[in-house]
Amino acid sequence: MEWFSAPEYWLGRLALERGVAAIYLIAFVAAARQFRPLIGEHGMLPVPRFLARESFWEAPSLFHFHYSDRLFATVCWVGAVTSGAIVAGLADLVPLWAAMLMWLLLWVLYLSIVAVGQTWYSFGWESLLLETGFLAIFLGNERTAPPVLTMWLARFLLFRLEFGAGLIKLRGDSCWRNLTCLYYHHETQPMPGPLSWFFHHLPKPLHRVEAAVNHFAQLIVPFGLFAPQPIASLAAAIVVITQFWLVISGNFAWLNWLTIILACSVFDRSSLAAVLPVPNPPALAGPPSWFAALVIGFTVLVAFLSYWPVRNLISRNQRMNMSFNPFHLVNTYGAFGSVGRIRREVVIEGTDDDEITDQTVWKEYEFKGKPGAVRRLPRQWAPYHLRLDWLMWFAAISPLYAYQWMTPFLLRLLRNDRDTLRLLRHNPFPESPPRFVRAQLYHYRFTTWRELWREHAWWHRTLIGQYAPPITLEKEPSQPASGD
Image 1 (cartoon, rainbow, N blue to C red):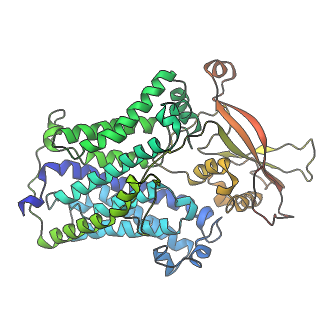
Image 2: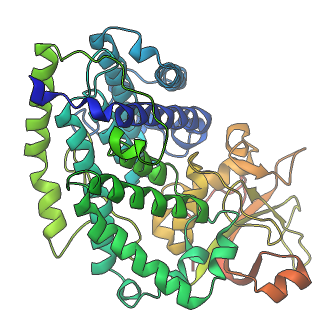
Image 3: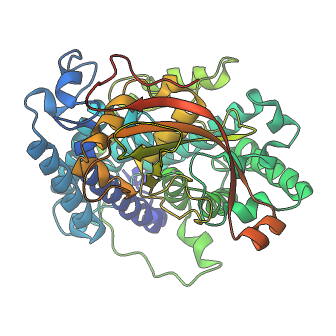
């Protein structure tokens, strides 16, 4: 089966396997550190309550058989240890079947988390990790040459990821068509990074160039991935460069990093050797017949499941970041089909006064990633994902995004819940919980160069009004918090 093997892609496979395992490691650690206040037994959206109304086939998860916070933590840390072992190279030291089982275990464990994660896990990078992670099962290890079918399926995934993102922009907000979206994007994106202020203040003509290059990279370049080498490697290099631009301009969890990892799988040895010193490939055996049969079967499955994503791509009513099956296999992707023109932020405040008066002093809770204190420079968090901070951006757009969890979140602050406070950067009430908490809605904008010099502030904010009225444990609200 000489046609089946692609030894010239052994470095691409190595980058893909180690990269996906590293992202799995980050995802499992993030889940372990954040799940208790979000979806734990006593969290804002408890898993047991969710499982009571969902069947296994609607939300395939090991937790249907039993759930406890201890079991959830065990799943996270088993996943972290297994993915760390693959990053260290263990999958190349064990038999091929054992390596496949390691990848299958990671996929099952993370699918079990995503399936019960509810709104906290409802983003495209979760589906992307699961789809890429399932593909990794069929990459083989150093005991066999890279299977050409699986390597081409990685390109097909990369194509859908990039082309889908390009189409949703072209079909969505008019500012993408007139090349003005980046006048606003760096300021209004969900979680700006430390360089976002500087990107925002680039000259507007350069912003228009950025938008045009983005269209080229996402609408034209993806077709080059299927061209002969070295054209395919050149297309992959453009994807890597444009994705790194996104990495340094904002925080988008592991979306950009997984895209870069997939693009690295496109590089063949001869193309890399033209620009870098690369080692010769090791001696790679042909595939066992059972492995070849599994890869061919997987390819047929992907071809069958691709009907729905491809139909979505060519549809005028294209939807982004959608899974067409509960196992998150062969999904559709996209990002920023619309771009906000102004930034709103929900600011959470508390007071320990017994009664609220005009003289009440409100103290602000500080989040780790989302904008808060105007003098604090945004931090780089990606590929680590701060789930509460990300959802706070959606909550500021509309209270409908937060109606399930905002009131439980505020009530947990009134109790100084330890797990919830670990999600935050600063608790203004370290000794005893506040008597009242409330949420205010602000308009945020980046300061100008002159304001930064004069005020030493990265943000300027203006109060819009009340988002959620003051609440206290003495009289818990009967309805979820909502904004004005």
